[in-house]
Structures are given as C-alpha cells and as structure tokens.
Image (cartoon, rainbow, N blue to C red; front, side):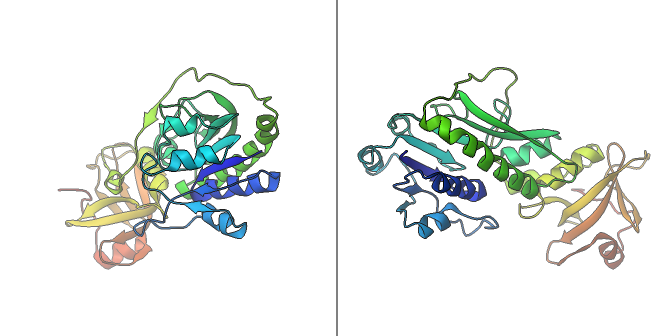
Length: 305
C-alpha cells in the first residue's frame, strides 16, 4: 500500500513509525519546520523519515507551487494526515485511490478543531480518544472509520494526555491498516452532539478567580508545562501557576484573595485553590510556600486590580 503522509508532533511520529512497521510504502513526508517560539518536547516524524531515507517537504502553503502535480505523480493509494497543521486542499484529498484519512485527537464529532487535547481538559471531560476519519472540505467533519477511547485521569495534563492519545493512535492505526488496504472498513457518518473549538493562545491562560476552584484547576492542568501556562497577576506582574489543587471549603472572602501562606491557598468563586508551583515574571519557578514567604503575600489580591 502506497501512502503519502502529512504529519507532525508525537502522534505524527508514532503513526509514521507504525506505517513503516506495517510495511507500507511511503514515497514522501509532508511536515513542518520547527517553530523557534515553540517548545519542542515531542518526537517529530522527520526523525523517522531521515532514518528510512524518505524525502521530506515542508511547504508553508499547499496551494502554492506544484504540490498537486507531485502528489498526483506519486500515485498514492492513501493519504494520511497525522497532526498536520495545515488544511489539505480538496484537489489533493481526492487523489488517492482508497481515500484520504486524518487522525484527530478527540472522539468526533465532539471537540472538532484545534487543540482538542487542551480543550477537553479545560472543559473537565472524563474521557476522550482518537478518531480516524475521511478528510473532507470542512475540518474534522468526514465519515469515521475508527475510534479508540481514552480515560482522562484527574491529574492528567496536556502533556500526559497527549502521550496517552499517541499510544491510542498507534493502536487504532495498527487495527485499521489491514482493513484500509483490503477496503473492508466501514464508513460511519458523524451524528449526535458536536462541538468545535479554535486554537488556543497564551493569553487564553488568564485565570478568572470568580470561577470555581475545579474550573480553574482544569485550566491550569490543560496548559501547564510544556504549554504556555495559566497565569494571574500580583502587584501588576504576571504570576504563572504551574500546578495547583482544588480544596473544598467555602469562604466569604473575595475571590482571588490569598487566605494562607503555608500552604498557599487562594479563594475562588466556589471552594479554594491550593497553589503548589508558581513563577513570578522575572523570577525562577518555585514551591508556592517558599514563594509566599519570599514575597509576603498573605491577604493580597491576585488578578488585575
């Protein structure tokens, strides 16, 4: 089976590796140049391509240049997209004999769009998964050919959850490849409750202390390392909260108020939040109690004020 692959990130790495293990012929890889402003904590499919001498292309725009002609000339049976960040034009999607398929990091039709791993945590979901589906003109809307569910643990972060989804992606692809090659898979239209979310920006990590402690915790774990982080403000400086835990118990204190220094506990719209690891703009990351003592922040207000 001849497969042209569009891929990036950890899921791109494991899926390309699985294709090679299956014995698929991969005449080329389309991927991205690393962004100097992005923390590259994951393995990249280009590492697999270099190992197996697979030609690599990194176009910024698939509509410009002769990419359609190149892909057409390679006569693929299948096109796969594994965490590739560009929309693939319909004329390219229609080239392969069997079909063009995308591996998406959620249980479609829920959490279509960008950053599904982070969004499911922000929204407090208890489960997610990966979906292999037909690519169509509208993002993440094509018929499903396979899904694999993943449980979300209470302490999962964006990083740990993405690594779980990478394992599930490999397992799902391993199950589906013989069915795809034999054209024995089923097409299942997407039905039921759907949702779509856009990409996340660093400024989306700002904490609203009026929200309940669990909601704030879900934001923190969704964007903690290696992502840009959840933050608030202390005396006009940005304060990153890299880890925290919700604490039950009601107070009449205004949300965002530091209640105690040891442990460092802050009031919220409902219940309280114990800060565990923090970092003030211009300072090092440190234990929250150490930080509270250093800056003497008891009874101070966090947030814009």
